[in-house]
Length: 430
Image (cartoon, rainbow, N blue to C red; front, side, top):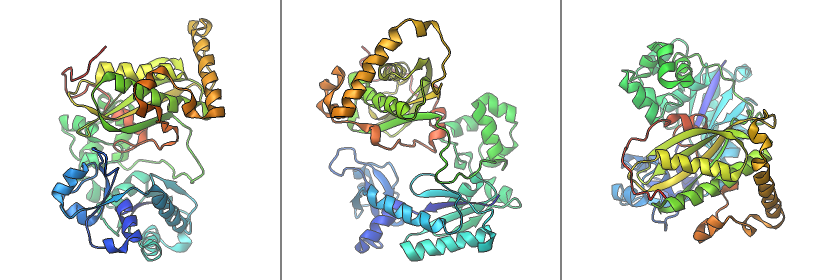
């Protein structure tokens, strides 16, 4: 298999510079709402990077690092337009194109030899993107998806890097374990505690020890580090079976009160339940909670529940996780709720099935859903929403799920465990 991983460099900021040529050579940051107290940097140019500006910096913090920083608003429609145009260039060489976010794609060019070797195709793509779209791209070339992504990260911007079966140990094994796909901060810390610091250390570790430390993800990461990833590159129209459905939001101000947390978890649970219904996934037996604090530290936990597709049960499970597990003494900036473990409409009968409790709640939620379909989401709301008029306007169902850390597939594995602070925090747990 010959796989490319294409990563558009500083994508949002690069599109801004393309739209506004007068920004050439200037440090640029694309940020959230500039007027909001907690707008943050979403992307930055190479010039801004040189001043130490980082993704996630609060705007005032970024401006302190770089006083001449040019702040640009987010223009997702423009970024999506450029992303589609670049993928049309990729499609000249293969129809096996798997997006990994708006600015990254894997390409399987195994059967594209008419255009040359993998490295030659990568160079052609790099040149054509630069010439036709005035954007730069870093392309990794390898024999599997994981190593192709690592290769694209090795040299930026505007570069092609080859990681082959002959040189992958030399090029990759000295890199920190955290550079590997799906190894985030929490997993890297766990590995470091047992002496695994580099990708080479991870490759050499006993797989059974890793599975004992990290569960099934330990074995998977072991295979990734040894170059044994065999995951195929999916075509753009080949969506994998949904294993989880979730949504998240970043609120416009810090949250200190549990009542506010609960309210927003209900908003998110509404979105999750609606998406489950639309996808005909049946009931879920696991609820996950993701929390980001005001210092942009992320945590996540999960719990088993009785199989459910009910908004109230999903929200209450997430809220109970928050009360039980979030003990950091910091206000909350972001929240996310996800459901998984779907029965896809094929469920085992239990005593709960005959109790009538579930069906009664399900009928009530179905009635609410039909009213919303006819008159709009905002026309009927839960009583809890009226305590905050801002929450009444929130309908996050159509928004994109954030990918905390490296990817949605491992978001809730990444921080699974006790939070780092054992204190009670500022929460009024009533």
